[in-house]
Image (cartoon, rainbow, N blue to C red; front, side, top):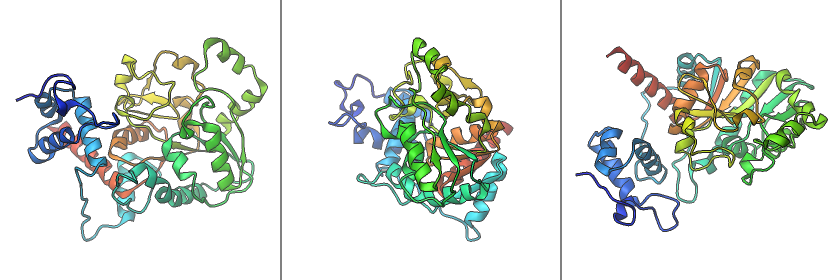
Length: 343
């Protein structure tokens, strides 16, 4: 029987007292239907009287809270090197760098707060492998993942120039403050920070002024000269609880987006997804990314699997840093998709 009605009529559809999460009963019900009773997301949505998008959020939240615990058991001949090579081959990437396995998240330590410590070492290895020399330009994106890893030590690459890929000095969250992330990364690497004093999405009048400002132009001119870019990969925008303030999540066009890099959204075919005002966005264009010699994407989590696969196949990046669980999820998704295509 479908569960219907408003949150006030049906407590199962309501959120917890602080309004930040779905009710635990609803999380458990959705997870049990999907994992124990092998219902599809569409069937779960029908039973709960909600949408497939909401079911996807429910399942992600159930995993985050530990209601669902997924154990990936490696075969006896498994090695991280083998896994990395298989993912690189499946995605057509030059190299995949794996972190140590992340410990299970807890209420006090969700996955996002664990990422930096575990991802910083492979990111450092990936950057060192580029062979950057003094005067080379490294671009860095905003986002929670890049911000978190920037809190930890990276192998020094003295003399490089570090610049942001997107404006963002008007964003309240520190992980969308691109100049702050640029400063952190530059300090860790021993490089020189170049700041972009511009909002990510200025109004029409300010947009024309920004593009005539010499200080801003100096940073924008670094973008096509970059030798390397370090970027996070965003989950589908309509399924995210944490997203830059300038993104209009009520825009119908964003329903086609599977993710973003450098605040540029793309669909399942890797095509740019525009939204109202995106023509004024101060950010590296998607079609510029394949021209940068080394693109290093950093992403962890089941909600990043499709964005990673699509971004890799669109050549937005050619190297990936992730954890073993996400790497295995990528292979599983590709295998499952290939099997469906043959039916």
